[in-house]
Length: 316
Image 1 (cartoon, rainbow, N blue to C red):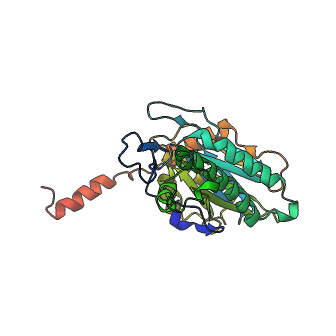
Image 2 (cartoon, rainbow, N blue to C red; image 1 turned 60 degrees about the horizontal axis):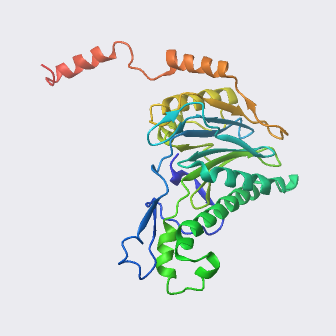
Image 3 (tube, one colour; image 1 turned 180 degrees about the horizontal axis):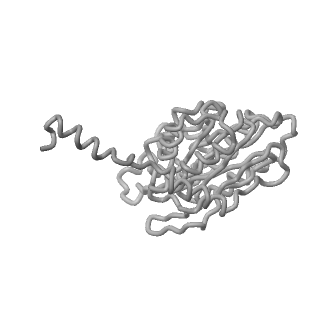
């Protein structure tokens, strides 16, 4: 779903330029040195080559998580090669979309560690969102220091001591993008379901009102499918499961979305990982969608339209 449909969660975010994907290490006075202006390509596509979908059901008491498992580079891709769905705490799960896998483990591990310290009574949307955004922002800060400050002999501490460099370097820091976004879905202490995303540079958006969220290059296909069905979180689990699988199948027309479909159905309060929908069950849903659910032209309608057009002398 588009970013505008979510609501911002959390405090002030670090520097962020949503239109840039390149960092330049070029401190004041280096402009005339040709070797100094080095572009660091942080991502090769603003929409990451995947699709991940989270959706609430049963008035927010049930949750469905669906994603592909394709791993893509600029030249090659392979299906069923990448795990994109991780448990990060009791009753919370994460799905990732990234142009580079280098930032995935540090963020997921840090979020998992922070969530493990939460007492049950503090298992709230606000607390979980805070833990994940802190994990993301910490990794952003380390990466920004490495690619912008370190090449010119600075750290975050010494950066504050160089006021004459701060305006220029601040512009470069705004361009730092981890090329990573994550959907978090799960249940709070009251067994109420929640969905939120965290995107560069560590900004959280809540999707409880819409009842679903999607990330990756297949996001637009998902949005079109679910909105066409007037999807909402009051629908029963079985219907939500079908619509989310359908949205995943539709999104496969986007380059970079794999055919294999992983489905998990988390249970509130579960101590273990979410239940996995068997591949055979996914195949049954896919076949039914291909046979009857996939959009098609109604039988005989083209002939009717042709006759209507002929009446208006558009077609001779």
